[in-house]
Amino acid sequence: MMNPMTHPASPHLALADWRRQVAELYATLRADARAGPMRAVSYRSARDRLFGSHPSSAIPEGERRDFRGLAYVRHDPRLALRARFEPDPDAPALDVPRSGEGAQIPMARIGWVRFDVDGTPCSLSVFWLNEYSGGIFIPFRDATSGNQTYGGGRYLWDSAKGADLGIHGDALNLDFNFAYHPSCVFDPIWSCPLAPQENWLPVPINAGEQLPESRRR
Image 1 (cartoon, one colour):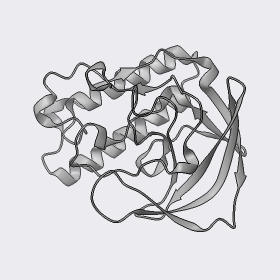
Image 2 (cartoon, one colour):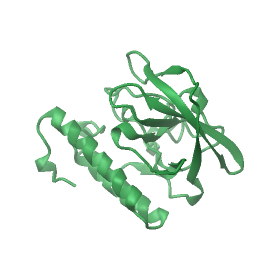
Image 3 (cartoon, one colour):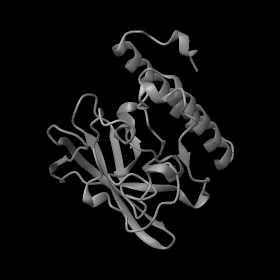
């Protein structure tokens, strides 16, 4: 972790540094062979330090001094899942809505993952970003969205920005303990893709990042 005094002054270099550090955070997570709760503690501590000090943090600059960390649910091993990727080569391109102004975001559905949560069958579309560098993108909404979590959903994967939970052969890691909010939750200057309706899960996902109590309904 860089000392806050050594962060780049240029906003472009700072953003490049932010993305590099996020990618390193996930590389460390993938390489961590400890039990799930210990992996989650290390990841969350490092992420909180990054959010509280980095100039490209989604936390507005005026709020970073009083920032004491993001809100999380205790690690739940039942929500550390792995699901086989089912390709969907004939899926049409689609545009995903965003939180702010601007055109919808072009993506391609490249396949599906299917899994159970407490006995309920669930599935998520796996998207490929058609903008900038591309990459796997998996957003989702669930029964906590709009109360304990952001109404527009959370993210499991955004590999274009380094958030990569790992692949094992033809299976993707879908560890909801590492689900996180998009940047627009913290500051409306960000315009983020929202979970399309095909990725609305019928069950509560009581794992990962939560809204602080002060922002819940």
